[in-house]
Length: 305
Image 1: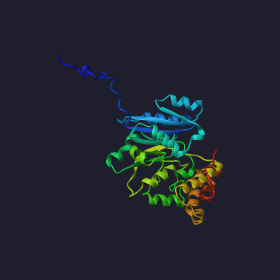
Image 2: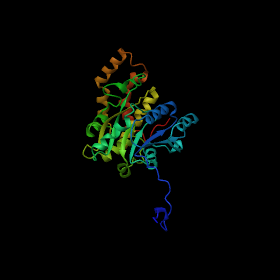
Image 3: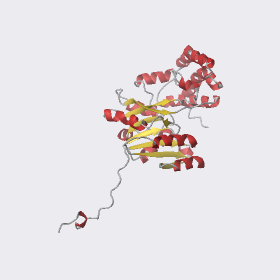
Image 4: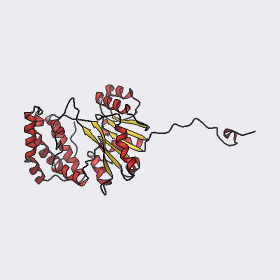
């Protein structure tokens, strides 16, 4: 008689085989994402990929409308109190809960642009074991362009501190709007208790020779628009964040950027083309240097609201 494996004395009968865990965890912080996160999740779950992936949403007390959207998709939902949210801490929380060996971070309003987004984002890891993180790209929506300066050749963050940062880091200002990180790397270098610019703080710690973070062609649709007050707060917070990562925006930087004639030429072209329509867009070449400087030197924390 031939014994089956389950008949061997002292052995427990074999249970059903466990399903393999995900290869990739897509982590999305959320707060009242509504229709924006619905579009993002639709695009994520429309990916044509052989990779097993999970989607983990860390939600900061969203209202019923957003919760209904999230429950319409097969996501893992983790809920925190709104006062617990912090850019570094919340992303670390998502990473700890994630089960994949690759961590993808995505904003709630950053919709993958194609059904090959995930594979394109992760391809650089397969080409080189020395790649620790991958930076995806961001495009403005074609049908509803947002803030004028986001689509300009020199972009929203044209000021000197950002230009210095990207020159030092091989042309990349790392951003968790659309990126991927090896889990083993995050375990050694979590984002930490960083109120803002947690991505730049992470970049500064893993950037050693220049090839640790590389570009990918994986792009998302992501845009912002600002009232004057929103713009002022955003730029001050950015200035404060630069100070957290050891970057100083000096009075000399302020003056050079304030009198940077190219920005005024771009403003003039935008006005002539009818693309500049709001007060915040008109004032941007002055607002960004002034309030960036204030945030970098005077702010003692993030401006809320």
